[in-house]
Every structure is written in C-alpha cells, then in structure tokens.
Length: 82
Image (cartoon, rainbow, N blue to C red; front, side, top):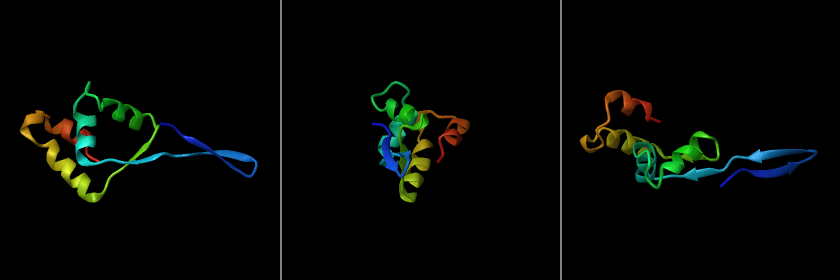
C-alpha cells in the first residue's frame, strides 16, 4: 500500500489511495488494538490510504460501537465516530 506518483506536466503529484471498508473491518481496526486489522488503523491515521465508507456503513459503525461486548465508555465511542 502506498501513494502512487503521477507526472503532470513538470511536477509530480501523489495520488491518494482510497480504500472501501465495510463495517466489520472498520470496527475491528478501531476497537482491537493488537488484532490482525490494527494495521489498518495505523495506515489510515498515517495517511497511507483514505478510508471510504457509505452512510449506511457509518450508521452501522455508530450503532456497533455501543455494543456492550466492546465495553467502550461513551467518550471512547465518540472518539471513533466518523
């Protein structure tokens, strides 16, 4: 994963890699600090790629962050809201 250099005239611009993620991937990347998808969060935060989610996915994520099994405090849930 990374940015792609594109030549435009005399300058080189960096194309942003955009990745479509579903609710389960986003949720796992955000909630589980050491899970196999935790790298997604690191890549996302460092600008390696820009995540794309639909409104439906965002709504599902907000709902799922409130599940008791994740044991997230209200402040933690707010931190990860899109």
